[in-house]
Image 1 (cartoon, helix red, strand yellow):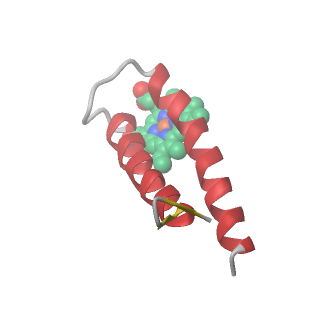
Image 2 (tube, helix red, strand yellow; image 1 turned 90 degrees about the vertical axis):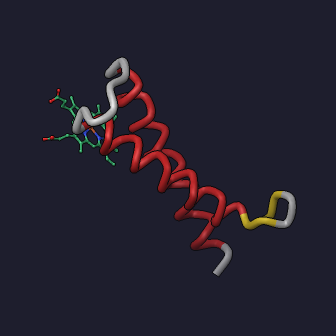
Length: 60
Ligand code: HEM
């Protein structure tokens, strides 16, 4: 499955990497945000990581 010629698994992998960097930097309070965003985006990361894993498995 691709979007504009780029694999959706690759795109989700990049999104996951960005979300992990956000989670660690806000969790450690290196970057200060309203902490509710740490919790919300933590749940989003769970979902995007699951979709990434399922699509990668199905496209073997
Ligand atoms: C729904 C998901 C999440 C919730 C509810 C949550 C909640 C929290 C809470 C309450 C803290 C403690 C903050 C404080 O001491 O003031 C924390 C810290 C932290 N979180 Fe999250 N978090 C979530 C997801 C994530 C994810 C997915 C990551 C990384 C990928 C992450 C990385 C961290 C880190 C690195 C810390 C700092 C820990 C420390 O310094 O001891 N969190 N988080």
